[in-house]
Length: 269
Image 1: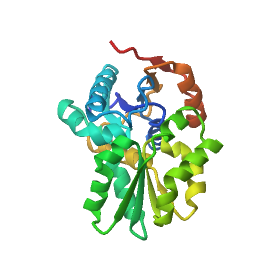
Image 2: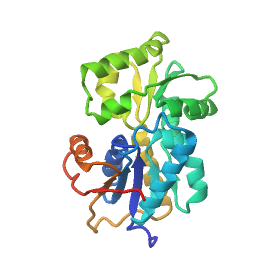
Image 3: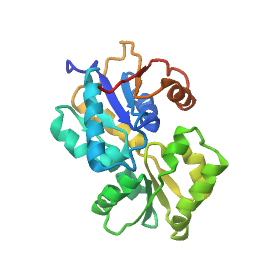
Image 4: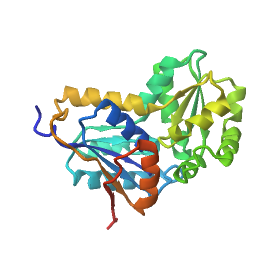
């Protein structure tokens, strides 16, 4: 066994959304310890510049390294699209993003070769999802839609609110007309709106949440590097936020269930 096997998996996102990835990691890798960083003081990321996202991502990986993590999952689609390549060059540990796993799944499950992508403005502008999908299958038609209001609605806890339905109907109208059969949830906040999205798009449209695909890829990578943690050792997950912890803790417990107790506040120097 690798000497680093007992160390934690670091996960970060702009706020609450990356907990969708944490939930899948806990399900598929129950023996692993997770250190989660939610940058709640600076959410949302989706309207910020590439330079800013890269700077934020560097800072967060640096903070996670102080907790002796053995790998980092960039659970933010915006950071995955704009900062992942930089992080991989600058830090000497495995770093995974969320875009490629989601693109691969969408290309695999679409039946009519019409795939929609909903994401933040920065992720849509980067074009990374569309590039990956077309690389896999050039016959797939890809449609993208920025949905900047979804992140603040999730952070507010409005998972099933009338306003959220109205916003979703506005954003998704064109994709419905173009008869997509697969919709990539291109932001880790969006799986918390699955009920709304199913209702608006109809049951025949498959929603692709990359969180499960990411968890499976993490498991595969840790096994290959002999970094899977010993099941006999107890562990407590750590949650770090950059703003007031109470709102995060309330919504996190609603999504993950019990056990969201060890919430700490990170202060930027």
